Image (cartoon, rainbow, N blue to C red; front, side, top):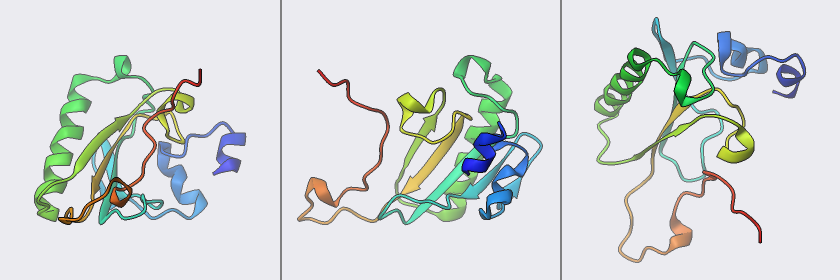
Length: 135
């Protein structure tokens, strides 16, 4: 991935992810693609990326039609996997603030296992969604 960055290429654009040996997209449409995350969070049963083809970094550049298609794909994935529950989050903007690696806007679709009766916080799937401000 570092060589893509050096060349000024986005991992998520134009199937650049294939250049670094990442898995191919499972579904490609006119607006974007869906693929399994090659680097899933520890404990995730399912983790998918839903990514627009267009290099969009911030929400104010996201066309409503693309957002609608992204959401329809999330619904499609949910139906296909028949999951009883999960989490969806959107990464966008400067990765120094988001906990992500790339600024290219994308959804993460994550499903863990059922929470046991003796659940403790450390049993949760660890993920970075941003960073604390140090005082």
